Image (cartoon, rainbow, N blue to C red; front, top):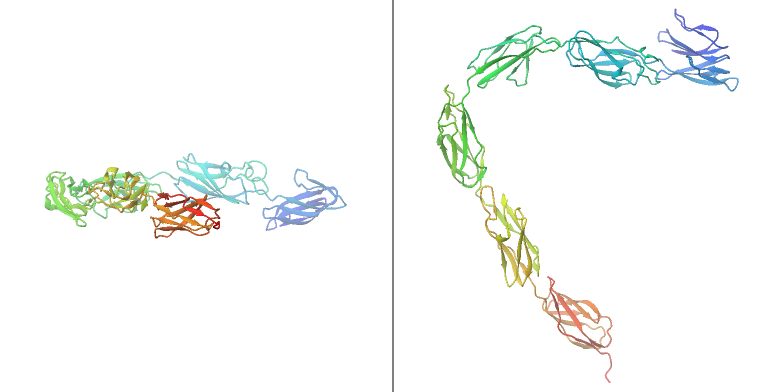
Length: 604
């Protein structure tokens, strides 16, 4: 509860048994006082000068700042502390508004956030303040340890506002650990008031909760059992070593998987393999410290001879032979024969089984006479080897398979890149399917020609699945295509590509069209012109007196330049130059001259 007003002379602002006197400097001074929720005195401040000053209203914001308004006369000091903050009125009385900081920040509590006692390597404390603060870091804390605890360290500070979490490395040894707050005035509130107010140490806090650190492990238990044994589920037992709470954990064969129990024995739930098996046991105390390992080894001898089938000697084949090496371990006698081996086949692949060195530790199984397509592998029946204890080898397989491939790669020749040409180049794309290696060269290509057409063959990308055959330097007239010899590609099984072709052909045309111009004498100054051409698809172009125009190929062996296409020609004789260009660019020109006469003069 906050109060403001005016007072003069000396007034006691403590409503209780205590005394909190303030003495006015003038006729009336301003006072601001605070009582707690029970009405007990908290503090009282005065402001003013030698004249009359009045406090009329007081308010408090969420950060604890106290705002007072009223009136003052003359010069008044508005700093209730040792400093001076004078204001001088302009008139008889002036209005004032003042702000006083709230109480300085203080530590409310330091509490544990983790279980206690503990053996943890790191523990957390919650540090609470009476208001929001900033500037909290590791340098603001001191650790107080007892017993043999050494090396504790503040490793992290997180949080904001009025609550922070401090993480502490617990160090080594046993004892207690307390987190204290050391006040060096770096922790401040929103009004920049330091912890406990100005002055180092006045906000320090040493009354926080304490962790009990216990890192001493109990003594190791004593583990026993029967060894050697032919029992595949033997039992281990143990007795406590002292200092524990009767909770144990065990790990078989250092699997990394611990099983907790209050039993003092262990029998595996499934049969153990032959050989040495080690059980390690630990005991725990009340805070979670585990003892050192205690071991006991039991040797179990129930293991039959081992058998393994190697990878095949080849991963791909067409006829074989392909072999497997069979390896026996721990066997004193081996007797592997053909009848012990099963051929595992897919598709229509098949072959003949043969066993060599069948009484040694490394027999060989060979599959020969292989035919068909698919995969082949083997399995071996049980009982092909034994040890002196009478244990027999189990079955083995199925083995890794190998591919049987009696299908050759295929080869296809694409259509030519052009259907008509005079000089080329023209290319074919060759496509191989199911080929693992391609080696296609110029010499593998035969040029198929008609007429006197010819050209030069060139192969590019000849080791890829899509080589290109290009025919360049083409001359003559006729057709050209290609064929490809056998053996230009192979698969991993050794099958080779067949021959391919003949391909589709393209036309080679190096003969220019023949064209002629019909002679004409006319009085028409923009006459139509005609002629013949032996290529019904050729493009026709006619030039007269410097005028060049396209003409119409009539498709029947004639051509026409329409009437009025030419601009007006004066009387005279003209050379009509006609040319015909075929589809591949061959150009033919007429051989006659002065075919056109224009005569507009009347007879005399």
